[in-house]
Length: 292
Length: 335
Image (cartoon, rainbow over all chains, first blue to last red):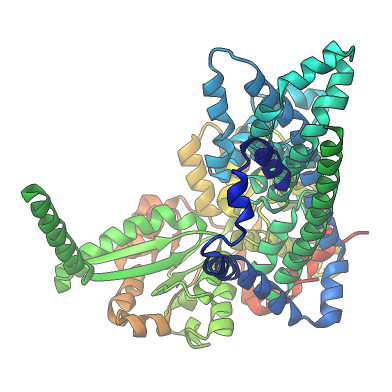
């Protein structure tokens, strides 16, 4: 996110006077609010996960975390979310590019459509996608003879996650693309750069941080996605059973501690991955700054 | 301005009259997945009867979902006055985890607290293209079977146990072979939905699978809703007597002061009218003499094993088959 903000400040920087006066009024109060609010909404529930997990003890925790079924579910959830996030980072950038750089009839309409996956209840998306990609669906009936199985296979999970993740990338990229100055590309062209060089050396460096942010958002959403996936996944243990479903199954077995242990594993993995992405992004942003 | 004041006054009046209505009795029945149609009609009929006999208006709300999930909701504080779940184990769980009702709850009402029963049948596509006649046909290569996940679905547990009971009987009680039979059966399952309704949808709407293991009432309903020209019900040689139990949640009704009406609601299920409605919605009534003869005639007779007879008790069946590391988990364990 910071990359986006950085770019904003380069163009909409506040007048120096206000920056020099460092003591903005209300800092203590607003910080207090923010921390209290964050604790109430985010930190306390998350702490609850770890407290409940601690009931298991170290051995119990290790047993849950090394269970073949749990490992398979975690691998599936993170793997499909990664693939879907990466796909969205590319496809979403392209969509954002078209929407920002070209004027064409129906542009606003398409722009509005992008938000649909945000607004649509994910269960609806899941049911619709399943109907489409099942063996007798509009799309599925053409894929099945080719030996491509989408619904009730890991590929179906990726399709659902691409659907729910797309707006994250597009909405992150749009403002950055709008800010990326066309003059720079023109200057590159006048200095004899080929189109590919302009893309690689001028345009992409400014986009990388935002693409990474979009990827991280889509990825994080995909890891936790439940509603749309359970309809299309097939839910076979160790094949198409996602980690959130395994948590629900453990709850249904009244195994609360086991469920929170899986949740804790997801939390830790997500945190580590998002932290790594943030580092990568900071690195990319620094590089982008140097290039410019 | 005047207009505004009038509006506010009207709104206040509406609110006041609303709270007067809210003083009338409200009941919450927490039930399982395929009982929607049945309880919708029961609730209306019971409310009419109560109003006639006592003059108070009763509004019965029903909540539906996978049986285990519903039990967990009650344990976690959903204020159910009565629970009408898919299997006794889920009500036992409410006793164990939240102590909302006494452990001997199942003895408080006649017939193991199950006013109606059902069983598990096989639903196949019209013309029965795979020639499925009995449980034994389900493990043949090339037959695709749809059943929900027994970890999350009460109906799926009955399916699982019915298949196991059949295998035990056909192998002279050999447990290892019965387990192998179940493993072969689950190898033919391409999708494990989380609930019975989901499995029906997968089979009927998505066109997945050759046979659906289903509640008898769900199979009848699917046939009726989606057209008898599409599906056939195959009655296996042996199945299980499914007893979906009902119970009063003592702590909740005492807290809310609804014990009398909740008791009457459960008694209504055993009344001639309740029995008639059960048969109408494809549940086997305990006292068929009260049901319409045509409704009762729809139920085929078949050999039914009981949970207590074949498995000892629900607690034992649960521990052996569906608990963490149980037979179901062993089937899906890495080989």
